[in-house]
Image 1 (cartoon, one colour):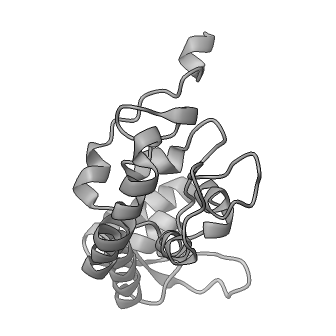
Image 2 (spheres, rainbow, N blue to C red):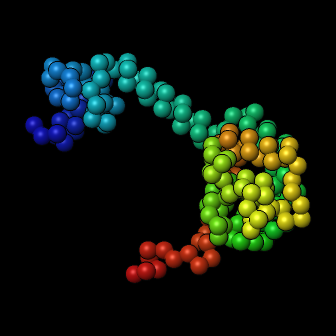
Length: 190
């Protein structure tokens, strides 16, 4: 039986629970091992169905956590971060005006960024152009232009990005990402 047929058989058997079958692999003996639905999909042997169930549970929990930020993170965003973005950024980078092609009124717009690139890289404040701009680290990109934000405000935005830049899920889902001005797609090239 070839590898793809073995994988397909493992998946079918995995739907019923688990199946025993040969699973040759590098660095381990070629004894038959139990294959589960998860191991059939990944092509990796496991010792029992319980370990795959545990892995599935962990991955599911991580996906849910990534999809819905914790309530304390959202409270931090709503009470500390959003007011800063509205006060210092939204006049020039809001829903009606997009200087430099940048909008700051929704997370997908911040991640996509403007003419200079992504404004926010979740979990990586040092790679986020927003932090570079508000720290006045580059004389050609100092934001807001009317004066540097307080160290406390800069720390708040830095912490928010380090937290993964939590934003209310419903707003993120409602973002309408059109093309950036001047952006050429593969369809345009054909």
